[in-house]
Amino acid sequence: MDTIAKVSEVPNFGKKVVTISGKEILLANVKGTIYAVENECPHQGSPLGAAFIKDGYLSCPRHGYRFSLADGHCAEHPEFVLATFPVQLDGDEILVDLG
Image (cartoon, rainbow, N blue to C red; front, side, top):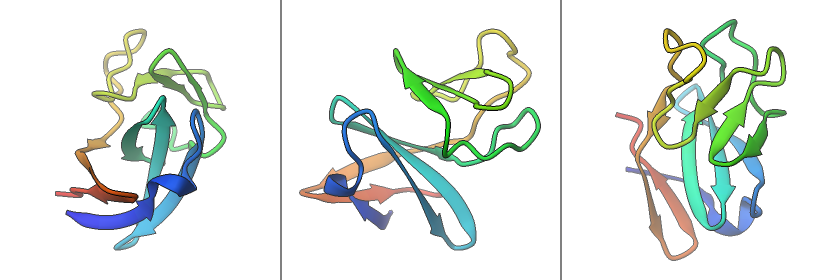
């Protein structure tokens, strides 16, 4: 697992984009649970830094496709799945397994 940010850098219901090994990862904080997903919508590749977070879903700012932060699935368009990455917290540090 790689340390990629600090919990204090990702406010509640906020996001932070980090680049690790040339890959952009979007971190999202939902009530203290940190999620890590790819920062590119699988529909048309739009960056997700401006996405909305609501009810455990991330909504793409371009077309509104909603992806589960937990597993990346899109109920409305199941053919599109957002890559998600396992997260572990160590104090204030966010560790992510990029596989």
